[in-house]
Image 1 (cartoon, rainbow, N blue to C red):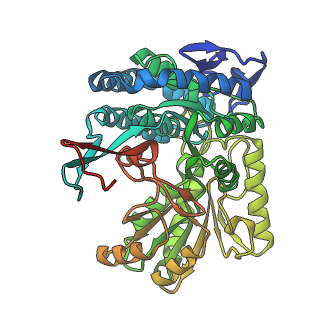
Image 2: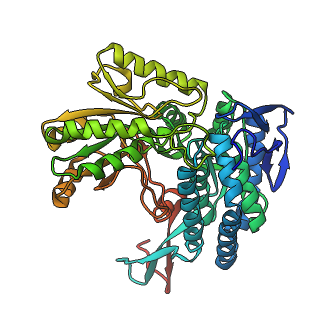
Length: 493
C-alpha cells in the first residue's frame, strides 16, 4: 500500500455551485496539506461570502424542481450514489488517510456508515408526509403536512469528514431540501468535493447540492452569509461548543433554527462486576480510535475500586502497545493528529496536568506528527484537560467508590453527548444509564457508536436537535396545518 503522503492527490478542489466546478470569485487558492507527511495534496478554492451567496442563490433556484421530483427518481439517485461510493472504496480510504490522517479502522467505519446512510435515505421519499387530525368543527377535515423548508446550510468538521458531511447533507436532501455545504478547510475534498462528485454522477440535479470551500481562518464570512441570507431556512453545525455558541447567538438574531452537535467529554463507567479483559478492549477502542479525534471518544474512565488497580495496569499496557504512524498502513491504530496546533495543544494540556500532580501511565511524549495513546491518572479538577473536550488520544483514569459516584462525577460536566457503562448486571446498567445526563448512553459497550437511523445528539452544552434519518423531518421540514371543508360553514355574522 502506498504511503499517505504520496499515494493520493487532487490537484485542484474548486467550489461546486449550480452543478458546475468553479474557482473562488477572488481567484485565491490555498494548499491542502497532509497531516502525516506535510506534503501539499493540491490547491483548494479559498472562498468567501460572495461565493457563499452565489451558492445560496443556486440552491434556492433549484429548490422547487428538486422538491417536486417523483419519489422513485429521488430513490434512484441515493441508491446510485451508494453504488458509486462502494465502487470507489479503496480510493476513498486513501483520500481519507492522506487528507485527515484517518487509518484503515476508522476509514472502514466511515464508509460503512455512509453506505447505510445513502441506502436508508433512499426510502425517505416514500415515507408519509403528514397525517389526518380530528377536528371539532363539523364538516372539516384537518391535516398536518410536512414540507421541506428550502435551502439548508450545512457546516461540517474534518475529523470524520466523509460521515459527518454526509450526515449534514443527505437527510435534508432526501426530504426535498437543497443544501449549501461548507466543509472544513482541513478536509475540503473528503468532506466536500467528493460528495459533489458522487451525487452529481448519481444524477442529483444542478444546484441541489452546492459546496463552498475556504482557507484556514476564513470560515466566518461563509457562515455569516448563511446566517444573514433569508433564503437559508435551516443551518446544521457539527463542531466545538465555543463555535456553536457563537453561531447560535447570531442565528437567534435572525430567528433562524439551527441543529447543533457540539463537544463531548464522554464518561466510560466500569462497574466492579465487569469483565476486565472486555472492559480494557472496549476502553482502548473507545478512547483511541482515530487517535481520539471523534466527538464520542471516551475522555474519562471511572472504575470502581475493586477493579481499579488491575484495570489500570492492563489498560495502560494495551495503550502503550498501540502502533502509531502512517495512517495508510493497515496496522496503524494511532495516526497523526490533524495539524501542528492540535499537537501543541495536546502536549501543553498533558504537561499542565502533570505539573499539577497527574501521573502518566502510558504515552505522554509527542512523536510528531503523532501523539501516542496516553493514559493519565490523578488529574486534578482544575487542570484544563479535565474541564472540557481535548481532541486527541488522551484519556483520564479515575478510581471511584461506586458507580453512583461515577455518575455524579460525570454529570458535573457541562457537556452531555455520549456515555457508556460496562457491567455484569445489565439491569443495573440501564438504571445507571437513566441517571446519566447524556443524549446517548451505551450499556456494555464503549461510547463510539452511530447508525444513520438513530437520534444522534446531546444535552446541555453539547447542543440541541438530533441528526438521524428517522428524526430528520423534525429538523428540516416545516409542518403545515391544512383544512378542507366538504360543505359551506355557517358564520355568526
